Image 1: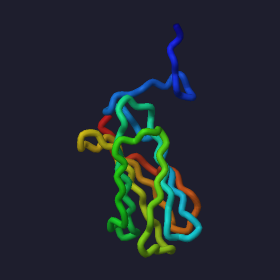
Image 2 (image 1 turned 60 degrees about the vertical axis):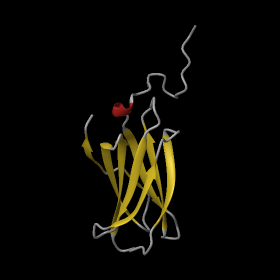
Image 3 (image 1 turned 135 degrees about the horizontal axis):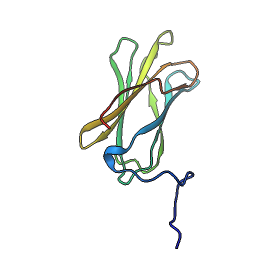
Image 4 (image 1 turned 90 degrees about the vertical axis):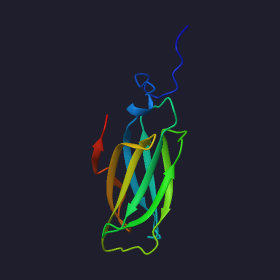
Length: 128
């Protein structure tokens, strides 16, 4: 009997928690300049992974933090609010993939509150 696969690419296999990775991270500012949409895509997983999204102001101070505990989808989309948007400067969205309190991978995306959509900028660290 053939094995059932529920992924677009049958070569993708379910990964144990410590082997899950962030494959894409996008930030899209909304037209009001006060909200942003953050989209995080993960590799296939056996156990639902968790991740944090932190928005850093241009001066490096934390603007907002959001935690996704036990993501059930590979692609997750969240909307976050900027309290006092600084339209002249660049913000940073940091996504940290977590397992049992350990950061497995971190990615950052730089964006302007009224700018174009941005894609993952750099990988900060990885313990894989």
